[in-house]
Amino acid sequence: MRSKKITFFLFSILFSIQVIKGQEKILEFNTDYLDTPLLMENSFTMVDDVSGDFTVFLTRNSDISAYHFNAAFENEGRLLSRQLHNKYKVPLGGTLKQKKYSLFYTNSSKSKFAGITFDFESRWSNTFEIDLNLKKEIYLTRFLYQNTFYIVTSTYRENFLYIYAFDNFGTYKKRTIDLSKYEFYGASEYPTRLKSALALDYHNANHLTNIISVQNDIPYSLDSMVSLIKLYIIGDSLHLATDINRDFTQIISYNLQNGSTSYDKINHVVLEQDSLRNSYLLDKLLFQISVNQNEMVFQVTDLNSKKVLKKHHITKDEELYLANGPIRQRGGRYKQYRELEKTSQFLRKLGNGNPAIHVNESNGQYVVNIGSVDEVKDGVIGVLAYLNPYGAFAAFGALTLYVNPVALALYKVSNSKAVYINNILNEDFEPTNNKERDDIFYIIDDYIKKEDIKRYTAADVFKYKDYFFFGMLDKKSKNYSFIKFIN
Image (cartoon, rainbow, N blue to C red; front, side, top):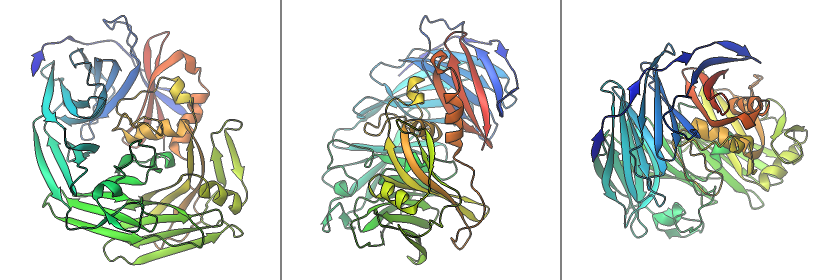
C-alpha cells in the first residue's frame, strides 16, 4: 500500500443553462489546464444520492482526473492521480462514503485486484492492492449493497458461491454459500453441477451467458437484458437467476443479512415447436417469455406462492394486443427506424433472434418491454471512444467493463438492432390504454447522432435525481459539458 499527496486546486467553471432542441445544457468546464499532454479519452461519474454531490472522473490509461461538484453544480476542486499500476486495467465498481470515493479494479484475467481512494476533504488519494488472488475460484460478477462493494466467485468442482465484501481500503470479508443440497440444471434434462447452470462450461463467453447485475431502482434498455443469467439485489437478498435450461427459470436466493438460502424452479410454458425464452425478476414477481416464429407466451408468477398470476398467449395471426404503441425497429444497416405492422413480423424477429424482457413498476402499474436484440458494429457511441469504465460497455461477446448500468444501456442501444414493443399493464397485468414514451436511451442516442461527433470523445451518461445527464469532451475546445434529458 502506498500513499501520496497529489495536486488539488480550484478551477474555473463555465456554468451555463441553455435549451438545446428540448434538452438543457447544465454544466460546462474547461480541461485545457490538465498537466498532461494526453487528451483524456474516457469518463464516468459517481453520484452521492444523499447530498446530491457528484464527481466526474476523466481517464486515460492509468491517469485519473477527478472533478467534484456540489448539488448546485458548483465546483469544489480537482484531484489528479497517476498511481494505479498498469496491470489493473479493468474497473469493477466504486463506493462513496463521507466524500471518499473508492474505485476497485482488476487485471485482464480477473484474478488480482486493487483500488484507489479519492478524499476531497483531506485532499489526497491513496492506492491499495488487495491480498486476494483467485486461483481455484472463478470471478462471476459484482454488485453494490448498502454502499458496500461485493464480488461473487464460484468453483468448477463444488456447488459453492463465494461473496467478498470490501471496505474503502480493500480489506475484505469472505462468505461461503453452500448450495450442495440443491440440484441444478444446465441445458440438459439431467441434474448437473452449478457450473453448468451458470454456463461456466462455455470457454468462449458470449452475450447470452454473461452475468448481468440488475438494480431495480434504475432503468435499463432492452438491449441490456439479452443475457440468460442475471443477478438481482432486491431488499436484503441476492437472487441469481438463469434461463439456460429451456424448461424453467432457476433462481438461487441468498439473504445478505441472515445468510439463509433457497432455490426455486419456475416452469416456462411449453410451446408446440421449439422456443426461445428469457425472464425478468421484479421484487417477488417473475416475468417470463417463451417465443417462436408462430406464437409467444408472456407469463407472470408469484415467487413466494409459485402461483401463475397471468398468462398471455399470442399467435402470429392475432392482434398484438400487448403493444401499447407500434412495433418499433431501431438500428440496422439501411434504416435507423421503422415500424412493423404485423404480429407475424414481430414473432419472426423474436423467434430467430435474442429475445429479452424488462419490467419497471410505476404507481401500481407495470411498464413492460419485450423484443429481440442483435449486435451492430461501429455504432455512434463506439465512434465517441465510449470506453466508460463504469459502464460494462462491452459489446456482446467480450464483457470487459462493468458497473454503471445506465451507461451500459446507452452503449448497447447505440450498438444494436432491436425490434420491440412497449406495454403498460395494470395491477392485474392487463394492457391499459396508456401510451408509453419511447426508451430514454433511444432519445439520447438520437440527439448524439445529430451532433458533430468527430469533435467529441469521453462520452458518459448517468442518472441524477429524476433526470439523465449525458456528457462529452470537445477535443477542439477541451470543454466538457453535460446535457440534461428528462425521462
